[in-house]
Image 1 (cartoon, helix red, strand yellow):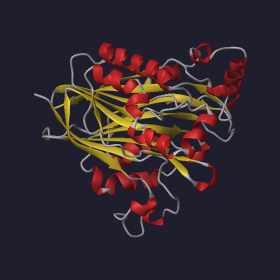
Image 2: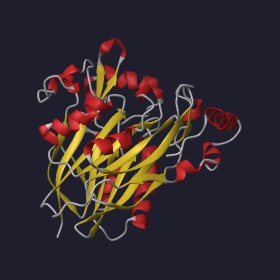
Image 3: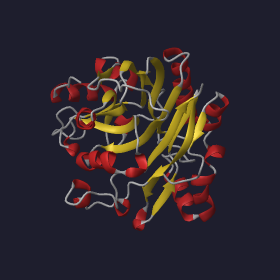
Length: 345
């Protein structure tokens, strides 16, 4: 996606002292379209099942390790579709690379990527773009973005950004038939009702943009069961075993977007209360959260589960490879979710 020179990024960012995010974003066409490329010819036959991976890749900072994880991890085989969050384009922290495009090229996948934020804090950023993506073995016939109602203004955060949460949608062609897919990233710095407002916008857009076809939605829905702006509430939850348990076992009771999606006909997986996010706490502890989901309509999950991205679980790492040399505690601060799906007849 075409970048914006540093001086113009700074000028646009300064407008947020007196203008809303929506007003400034209207001046930036990159926020309103998806970058898309089809590198891969369609498979010769439609397999009986489609492997679906949902993975928040934490900015693509460890891109080589992520590539090897995707190529070598036996727990995510096969995958035909990846719904990905947090992939940089032109950010110094990830080597000023177009991480989504490089990953698509390396894996031989088609992709669509949408711009969530323009990062303003580092003048070394070539573009400062950050967003979400869909990767597919099947042709992407149409793609776009769904901008979500603002629940938090990220310009007035220490990260200082232009933009806001979004979903990236794509219409795939699978064996001559359409399949609608959506990569979603909801707001963490709000409460359950705030995320429900954003999810309602997505469900309405999906009915409009991807009608009359099977649907696979997924992403980091940030279903943490609390308001991510409330430090006291987070501290109280972290200190209480019962409250900590709700972050895994009581998510449907505290996050109304999930029962709302279920009432709209979506089957939500995985059902088992497994941790997908390790939220760091003072003193080296972490709060286990259940943030990442796959939602299916007209598609059935034969099985689904969480896949660890912690270094100690990389028993499959190839000797001498990037994963084997990796010294961090985790490849991403999120675990991945995988599902084996079949289209309903």
